[in-house]
Length: 397
Length: 227
Image 1 (cartoon, each protein chain N blue to C red):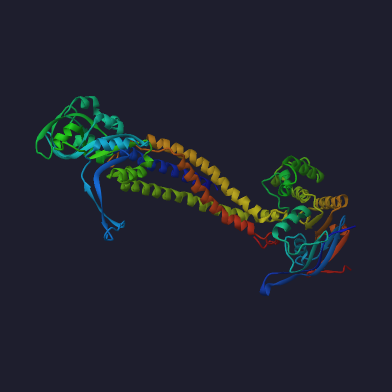
Image 2: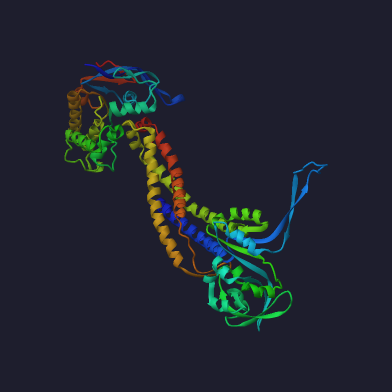
């Protein structure tokens, strides 16, 4: 019984702990995504194309059309107008224009092609978490310098560049332009940190040779969970490709989801094994208590009374083991969040990331109660079906 | 005196196929209030089976069981359980007490099922019954720390918990020494006489049988005339 109890406690604790970790990393990733690319992006303009399925004759009106592949026109021409419309939506907190393109960055040591983003700094700070992501230099220097450059931390390492260095950026017109490294940022998403840099929008227009238009608009939402609905609505309204963060990051989010499910299934196995233990314990207990069961039946206790006695035994184990598991799970989660571990790769983190959510505790308890209930039900049913007279005669033992 | 319970032409078979045995062969009996009837006979003659059938723990293959004139045949498990709880008190050779419970808690078990008394009233009644069987000073002693005679007296108190009119005792003194046997039987007999109950007991003990109001001898599943 003690082993079954320990199994439930450990199973619940590990369930909570693994869910806290996997969701911790997932939330960190989502926060990084929202903080660097916004909840929504409005991108290329498109023209819907239709072909009539029926040909009109004379003055007939034909409304049956067959939608064809859209024709996309790169970028956004009327960015101010689009942003004015976007800001009208109550869920929109801020939006910022971005002009993006590939440039070649040269230092004295190295040459690297990366994606530069020309930004309106004040709008960008309102829309993203760039202000909190600066790890070297400062934004004031970037703001003050028209040829300022912010580099992702991994990119800066790759080209061995530091704050205060001067580098050259060469765009499609092949004209090298000098830029001053004003700051280095770290989003935590290495894919961004090793491929992205920021310059001022007017400078980007010169480097990328795009005197008008922008590449995309980043939108920050008050409630990012409603991004997919707003994206669909905006796309329809603006006739520009509009993608929510869930749409953009679908692949990675599915990986996180799969890891969470996998961890839950693996850890649930411990609880299920504990359930088998409870099944065995209750079965043996019933064999040991056949006389007591018979005497209870002789005193007028009904089948369901006997069944309930053993179900309560199981539920008591689930309740006490589950409660102990919740406490242990919380302690383990806290302890793991303190463990220093240097993670570099998909993420950049210096300790385990955990997420505190009551849903982990409810889910763990739910799994424990279902497992224990199933494990208790069959022995309890067997106890309820014992014929007292067989036991009293001695045949039931 | 009114008849509390009885059986008419009771037949019971046990086992299957070749090992099928005709355990009760048309047994008929009545037990009136205020009387103690003994069933005697060799082991395997059907004494216990008759008690189980009359106590609604077993179902006869033929014949009728009557409690206060009401036919018990065809009743569902819930109704039979309710009758056992309210009207019948069992005492077995092995007391079958809940070892982990105290004497008081053991006596309260049938009352909890009946649910007519408050927990406080149940405690008071259980204490009263235990006092009546001479265990007033051992209310809170766990069953496993009582002697054999004391355990059987707790079992008697438990059988009286819901004030049943019928008492069925299967070798109630079979596991006790002579002194304790007479003590337990004396208790049962006094209760029957004082409280107007009916007791049917199966026994191998001739002196106890002799002290009963009526002795019925059983052989091979039927009553035989005593010589």
